[in-house]
Amino acid sequence: MRNRMGVELTEPEAGLVEAYERLAGVLRDHGDDLPPFARRNAAKALAVLWQVMNGLDMDPGQIYDLGA
Amino acid sequence: MPESQYWNPRHETMPREELEALQLRKLRSLLEWAGAKVPWHAERLRGAGVTPDTVRSLDDLRRVPFMTRDEWMQGQLERPPYGNVLAAPPEAAVRYHTTSGTTGRTPIRVLDSLKDWEWIAEMWCYALWGFGVRPADTVFVAFGYSTFIGFWGLHGAAEKLGCLVLAGGAMTTEQRVRQLADMGATVVASTPTYALRLAQEARKLGIDLVAGPVRRLVLSGEPAGSIPATKRLIEDQWGAKAGDTAGMTELGTIMVFECEQQPGGTHVIEDHYVEEVVDPETREPVGYGDMGERVVTSFGRGFIPVLRYRTRDLVVKVPHTVCGCGRTFDLYEGGIRGRVDDMKLVRGTNVYPRAIEAIVREHEEIDEFQVRLFTVDGIRDEIEVLVEVPDPGVDRAPLLERLAGDLAGAHEALRFGVREVESGSLPRFELKAKRVVDERTVIGGEGERRQ
Image 1 (tube, rainbow over the protein chains, first blue to last red):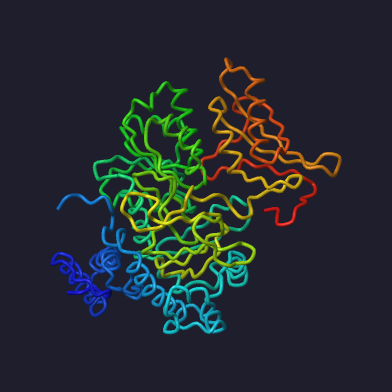
Image 2 (tube, rainbow over the protein chains, first blue to last red):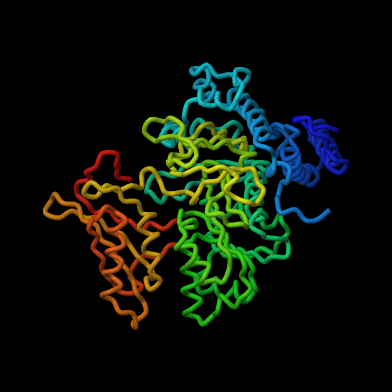
């Protein structure tokens, strides 16, 4: 996997990118189906993982619509 | 993998060309976001003919109009409480903060979401990690934890690092000293002025800080963190390394930090900001080594996009090669040198509070001081420095004479009065120190403004 600057990510870095995308996908597609504890903790986790995405130059954009 | 000395090794050691490519990419995203979500920005960008696709190099940033505090404040007045700068609905926010309001003006009000709040802490992580703070540290935060943003971000960063964090809010200075000593704090965060105040209190309590476990002082909130004499005094009184940082509520966090090498300046966190330095009058860029006003563009907080914000901070940018730490982030030599508005014109001579502090702190016998400007006979400006000398054994006359001479020598022979006042009578500060009292009835100087 390469970042948006064309740099190849390491395997563990790519693992975090996948985790972020999976988490963002769950919140985007099923956020309203989650109980409050799951939804808000997931949003908080997404806010933290966003920093990893940003630091890896994956251009994560903004996530206010996902509650983060 | 051996432990990195950098928080984000790839970014902090990126070749300049790659760093600038990253900044350009982020700049286009920021313009896209601000133009789409903030009508106020959209109108300004449209008026200047700026679209993300026409921004082809960082030089194109200069086509974006400056953003000023006055405009921000005017927006707040017209559309209270937040003005016209928000890019997300207020209900998406989890934090509300304000500027410290030390100038007596209405504070700027800001909002942050979960993600932005984490980013705010992330910027402090660059500073803490870069200054040698590690998970095993116990960090005491000497801060009031109010809506003033202050060290909130540092608190979050220290938690993120895995440190044990002691929140020193709602405590007297004595309680703070006792707690940081009792708990074996290894890192203390405070303003430079308050670091001296804490050391003074420790002496009064018979607590030997130099022999204690504190090994790092993280300073912020005042330019004094990079004034060599003040920094040396703090380091001597604590027996610890002191590192400067600087931030602003308008950004939510810090934008510069001093690394462990203590190169006499602060690195700009350039993977998250573009910092221009311009002549405050002509607004034209100034080169490395020349003093000018910081103009910041932030890629961080999305809730309030900041594009070419005129900070009024005076800085001297120097290339990253000045420091041997390996970072490719440029530095501000001497940190924040003061404010454009700080300058006082006294009988034709420019006087900066920071320069006065640098001289006063060379005289270790002086504990606290205040600069007073007043008018004599309705026309003549006078300046005097009031000092506290707590040690009764100090020979006063030569000390005061020496200080007056040093101040005059650094200010084109401008006459400074130096007067001792009772020990403990001058104000003490926990947040930003305000040591200049301007009582002049006529402020006479071109380029000078009463705050």
